[in-house]
Length: 125
Image (cartoon, rainbow, N blue to C red; front, side, top):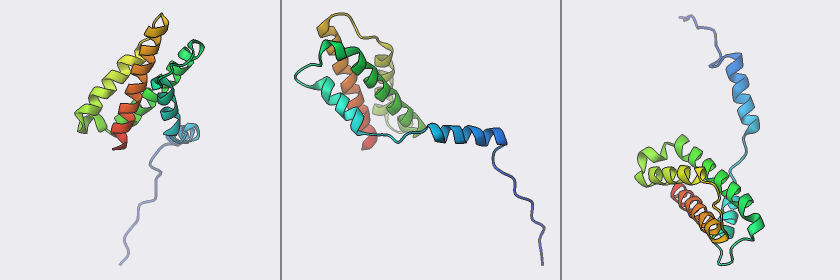
């Protein structure tokens, strides 16, 4: 006995498939070493030179947002209250600019560094 089979239909429209393709082309593999290098620089006993402060802060903010995106996509904050708290802290820190004054800036870098480290460690466990 034969049964009629419905013709196959793609799961997405042409525009939907184009969007997925564009996102795949723009995707980069997460490099866990880069955040750790920047965390080490921020938390080192010898603070980074003043000229590098803004650039390092920007990279740390980028690491934070990438980790937050990963955590949210994996719904980690729904399963782990600590991750939810780290996400909120990361968002607050990212919104702050680098403060005036050498030691205030170093303190800000260290807060960013710790936030990256803690969120990365929590997501990896």
